[in-house]
Amino acid sequence: MAHTPMADADALAFLASFPAHTGKLATTRRDGSPHVAPIWFVVDDDGSIVFNTAAESLKGRTLRRDPRAALCVDDEVPPFSFVIVTGVVELSDDPDELLRYATAIGGRYMGADRAEEYGARNGVPGELLCRLRPSKIVSARDVAD
Image (cartoon, rainbow, N blue to C red; front, side, top):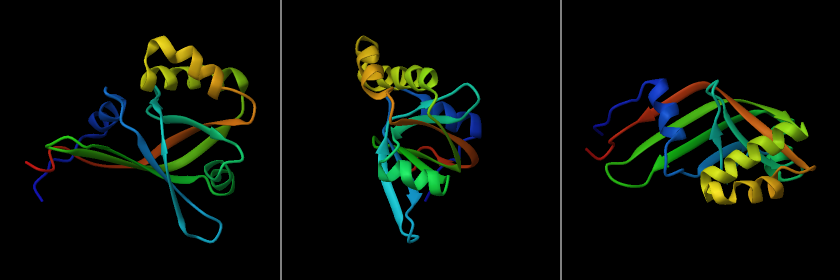
């Protein structure tokens, strides 16, 4: 397969690019089996990937038990590219941070005119702010070339 790996900075730029791609977050269930779920996210200035989830969702429960995770984001348009990030997820229920990031995430995926609506819907008690700190990034651009 002919493809070109991206530098980490380019991979983070791909993750932050528009149109926004949905991420696929992998965590580990209590029995060791994988769990994969789609997420909306933003890339923070420090290079961490920030998303939110309900504290009692399967994602929330698995991340509280084992904070290790992997995120795959791909461009489904030829010539195809992807980024896979592995690392540890830090969790917070700080209401100000949760509202701030839920609003930013909502704006990224639904447009600036709906950012506040999605922030109010998703930045509420019972949600967790999740920050994936990359320890490893694997990427490729132009996979089909």
